[in-house]
Figure 1 (cartoon, rainbow over the protein chains, first blue to last red):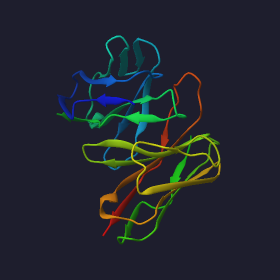
Figure 2: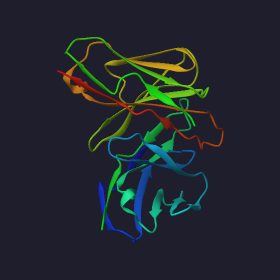
Figure 3: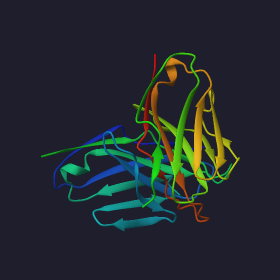
Figure 4: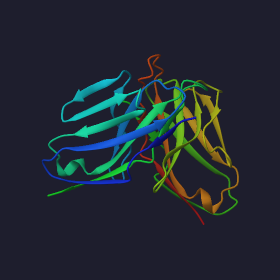
Length: 111
Length: 115
């Protein structure tokens, strides 16, 4: 099975850059995804890394290193609306299409 | 856009009741999932289904069952509700992608309170 670890909370100021890490223990997986969830809302998909390296989508970037069992989400030019919880997730290659989530990182953006 | 609809936003039930949570998606997705979300624990997979009438246990299936009689509908059943099943329940769906980069679309959630 999979085990994903993320910091529980991160605080940053508006306009700054913040990195949210995700380390995992797995015997194999397809790739690493990231989801954002605002208070009271549903999780929404942000990005996916199937290969090692950096994927960029606007202010958000995501990185994966399979050799280090590590990935991160990078948020640039932070805005107040980025205050939310961020989850990393992996899809297990066995037993159908099982997607497992980390416990989530709560990001607080301060003015 | 994909729409995943959960039948109730808030639900209050009594211990021992049989509870049905309904989820419908409108994009012909093969895969559907039920998660529960608790503070500090993230999203934990209860059951998922990759086809009609097919179901697979997730990480915490005890006390739950599911039904998928039609492709668009996936029901979560609490056979005898208990207080430790008080939680936010999230339904999701996705299209199968061989590369693994499937995107899950979530419903708005059902906050279930068992008293």
